[in-house]
Amino acid sequence: MITPIKTTTSLVIFAVLIGLVLYLTRSYMIPPSVEAHEAEANPEVKHEKKVVVKLETLSNTIRVYKPSGKALISLPKVSLDDPNKHVTASSLAYSREKRQIVTQVLDVTTGETEVFISDAVQPWFALENRGQITLDYGFKRDSNTPVGRINLHQDFLQIKSLHVGVSLSGYTDGDYFAGVGGTYRW
Image (cartoon, rainbow, N blue to C red; front, side):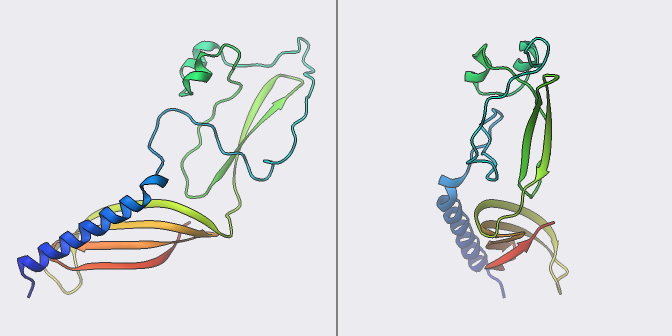
């Protein structure tokens, strides 16, 4: 029989575990921001040297957005305020489970920039910091009484498309689950 003391104790233990996971991962969390940040270099070309290329347009110019267009984009203040920095392309990339590579290609004969987005190769091993919390309400097996459930999942390691982490679940009836596992995402 489930007593109020068991329910309270399990919820307190669950809350402490959630707090511990959040405390231990706080330094790795990136705060949400609407301001743009500099993108990580693509590892495939990160160590390649850049070369100077002459523009072959008739006026030796490239095409950029007007300053009014630049002002509409969420850029760091340093870039927005610098009249020598211009936007040649701006694209929308939808959030996905897989890492993506965004590449800008400048046509030196027309001065136009094209932007290409491709999926990056999944790493064999990579540290990961991705978490989620889920609240559910429904029925457990062999029970006619609805229960609430809170799930906390934190991934720490990625092996190709397999994500390894910890999971914690607490139920309003006092039941709980804590364990480790892997998730395959598609």
